[in-house]
Length: 170
Image (tube, rainbow, N blue to C red; front, side):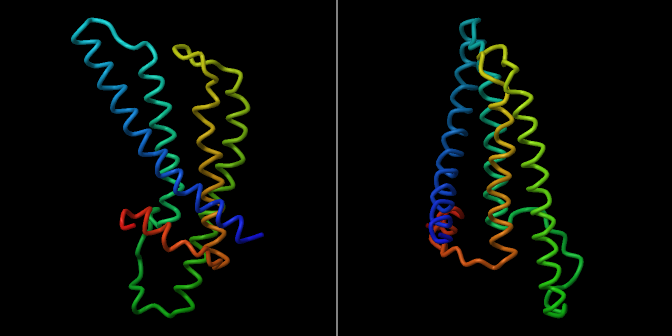
């Protein structure tokens, strides 16, 4: 069962990378097209700012989830790890994982609530539910919780190839 969950999340991670790349390309194309239309032809795409905002928010929260996987979240080095006792290093690493889990739980709880409130609101230019914008928060929270829990419990995810792919080396 655990192997299947790990396999599913590894596929989700790879899909998230491709999705993030597509979102960046789409944002650039939409913004470029809108600028050309606005300044070159004195018209524009009414929906471009809304869609670009949606893509940017989703990109940021996808990157946040992938950043936790890669250990790219904010770290403060107060102590020289080489001089620190192993038990203290292990305890501080566990504390870090617990803090990330707490942040993930908060994001999931309040993100879900926010999506529920905003699904009834409609974005003016696209007529899409505003909840789509905020759905990135609980989505990212699930990824963050998965990564933090696997790190906390030292679960071997057998994903060296996925990590190499995510870091651009694969």
